[in-house]
Image 1 (tube, rainbow, N blue to C red):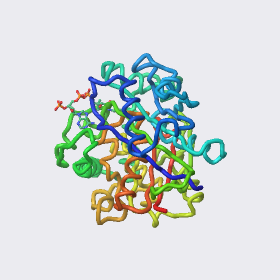
Image 2: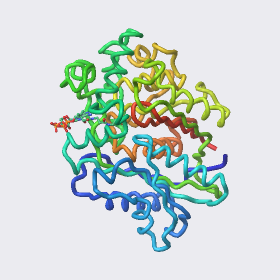
Image 3: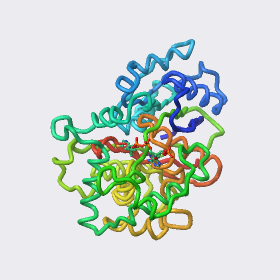
Length: 370
Ligand code: COA
């Protein structure tokens, strides 16, 4: 693979009531072109990641909406895989580049979630769970099941779940694009309002609007960030059909494939952005990606092994928890953030992990300095 990230853009996620879905898309396109120093006509194709514009904003056909922002109307496709839409769009873009069809493509991840009420948002998000087998559930409830199981089987404690949140909010303090710049104590997280037990308000990623964009290219560039390998794993849509609730098998498969393609292993990686949609999700990811043995990540995170000076820095951006989680934008944001970390010399080899639903889809991308 010889694909470089030659441009990246992330807006500050949040409740962006003064911006429409189209405004966000335009901001992402303008921002990434400026960052890459390219004219619009350099874009040969567009991959738009979006989970639910049809429901949140009554707007589908987002490929066409992105394409019409350009006078030359590049071919554009929307990619949807629930909260993994962003990294699936990055994978689709890489496949198109590897085929030799294009040399320079744009990936745009966007979601505008705050135009509807909280209850509607939860119901729209829940359409990514199994309608037939999980009807009436919300994602906090499904991840609550995973958290309860992990606590029962591995002895993971309430305080260890809280330590994930405390760390990620601390990391976000140095990320100007994060939705929340607020420190929390273990006690504040552990005593926050119950949402779906054992998960509480501060265990959950928030509802957010946002856009992130990348320009990927096989052409020569002075940029240093190269995409070294990707992997994708799938599992059953419904939790009830899983063999083992103590792991997300799709993450394990995606990681194995990505490490094989990149010809690297966990010890080569200094930082990872993982899909911490809920505190338990970061613990599962740290284990299923192979950075910590099963059942040991929670204690390791609580013992500062997932921050600077530890084994691997997990979620240096603040993660979904503190950066916000505009679902279709998240996977693109993870890679844009990590590319920026490489370009500014903070890390050399990093990994992004993005999950759709309660683990039915998982995507891993490995990036490194070339
Ligand atoms: N982290 C930190 N603070 C948060 C927060 C979060 N995740 N979510 C909300 N807050 C803060 C708000 O800023 C607000 O603070 P303020 O009163 O000082 O303004 C307060 O907590 C209440 O926020 P509100 O927006 O009223 O919360 P809510 O009850 O509407 O929603 C959740 C809270 C947890 C239910 C909602 O964010 C949620 O459903 N999250 C999960 C999203 C999800 O499932 N994503 C897909 C994952 S697979």
